[in-house]
Amino acid sequence: MRGLIMNHKQLLDSAYDRLLEMYGGDQTLMEVGFLNRFYQEKMILQECELYTRYLGFLGRVRKVAEEKGEHIFVRGTAGSSLIAYLLGATDINPLPRHDYCPNCHWVKFKGDGIPFDKDRLKCSCGADPIADGFNIPFESNLKSILSGYMQLTVSYAFFDEVEHMIRDEMWDQAIITLRNEDLTPTWFCFQDKEKNEDGNYILNGNSELFSKFPRITLVPDKTLDKYRELEKATGFKMKDIGTEEYSDAYFQFMEGNIEGIPMFDNCFMRELWTKLKPQSYDDMLKMIGFAHSTNVWRENAERIYDEHKMSLREIPAYREDLFNLIAQHLYKKGVYHTGLAYEVTEKARRGYYERVGGMDEETMLALFRLDIDQEYIFFLEKIHYMFPKAHGVAYLREAIRMMFYKNNFNQEYNKIILGK
Image (tube, rainbow, N blue to C red; front, side):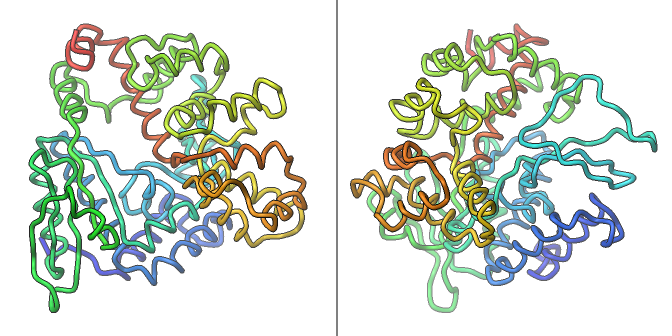
């Protein structure tokens, strides 16, 4: 298998070829913003061979998983990378939302979210346009890239095979494994093989010692075993859920039919649903962000929303919402370097401002000069943690798939997923 593993340059070249294949074989016809995003990432990934190697590895894991009918869940950082998407490491396209024709390669930008129109128009060439893109900035991925971290969740049945794939991929590194008896989670930390030996440790008590090591964290999840069982019982695979079926399931959400859907059928989400009355995919995506981030909604965004100082669209639910909001204010002032947006986002999403008792005067003044409301600054100072948007997209996608099974295979769904 090692002979099939591409080197760093080959991976980046492969990603570029896929970009041309999707958006235009002739580079001069491609949307310049897409090219700019690719080169922005390439510039950084050229200096981060290990992370690029992770992306190539994840692409192979996802391919094997699909062939075997397995499911994996790649944590949010990969979902903010266009190159990760092009290499098959994630199925979340981070580009701005757009429709495009796979034959003619025209691109039409549509704003945030993904539409589920049942009567989509065909292109003049006869092809069905593809709706894609979740508007996720690459900057939200930088910490994981520079630190060499990657995390993915797999079924218990697939766990051992993925562990073997990790060891095969990282054959030239000393692999230090940290796990507890229950396998949840397992760290595979990598060090120079010439100076270190392989080792096995208990995770509890050693996680802090090894926390700075580059690593892949592998997490087993029984839910993914249930997905495989559900597909077997119904004879219908998730990958075969088409646009029409997906649309039908989505519109069930718009009817408020959330009973029995993991991620939505709980006290917090029912309360949020009653208050916000979601009308779109973006609204539901925001709700997942509010549910997973801490001190973002309760007595914070909730107060701003109740007092109508901000609309739901304006209130950040994810770290990427926050980055994009500040970046847009910078652009309006003619500033195209997003360093301030990155620093404020990184500190807010980790709860730094809350821990130190507020925002420093210099940063506060900089935000005031961007015409950002004082209420918004107070909002940032209360946040403990902000969820990555790619995580929310993946969870919402799973929820809509579960709605499909609930509606079409109710007996199997209740027995396998809900345990009824």
